[in-house]
Amino acid sequence: MGGNLLVMLASVLMSSPSPDLREKADEIQTLVSAGEFAKAEPLVREGLKEAPEDLWFLSRLDVVLHGRDKDKEASEVRTQILDAWRRSYREAWIQKGSPVGEATWVRMMTSSRDYRVYGAEYFTPEVLGGDFPITSFYKVIALPKEGGEGGRVFKLEMSDLIEEFYVLRELLENGGGQQAVPYGPRKPDLRQLVKDAVQYLDRALPRDAARRDGSFLQ
Image (tube, rainbow, N blue to C red; front, top):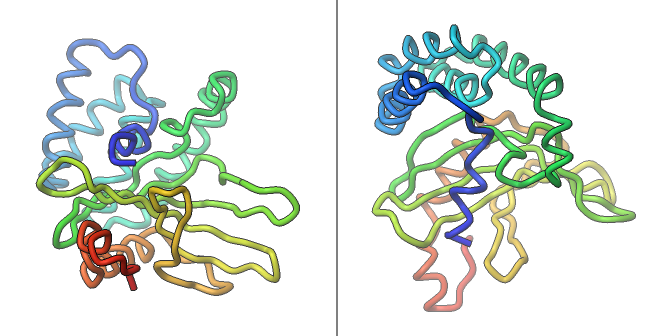
């Protein structure tokens, strides 16, 4: 699973950026990765003046606004992102076979004790299954701070098998999954979801320890 995590995290990148815009994007990514959201915000806004509907820059604006606790502004940017995606990206995404690496955009970045944690939202909810489908709305990806393998993926899923029931589920390498946080009929927002995922990661056994002793994460 670890080798595919960066692909799943990719969002939609710029298709043909100018050299200046690519240089700006590299600087923004360095600042965002370091949690320097206040320094990154003006650079992101400069990039959007040149490419106002570019999903990479819009996504990074979403990230820095969340990082600065500007939730109302971030919500407005979310609407811009969804409008731009439906207008300019959706059809091309479907024609490419709806690739998973372009199914979400990153909205939040934070850290747990051992992981860098990314919260992402689906452009359109992912629906899997037949008679009793499971719908995914958000994805949380945790990458080890030291790098290498051992990344973890969570999804906020809703099943209407009996009634609407939301749960944060961790995907396992065998193709299955296990419940991390139950929410019942209340759908959490992404900020709450990421906070809960961080708490879960901090109190759970490290994934390699769980493999060694055969236990499940609680």
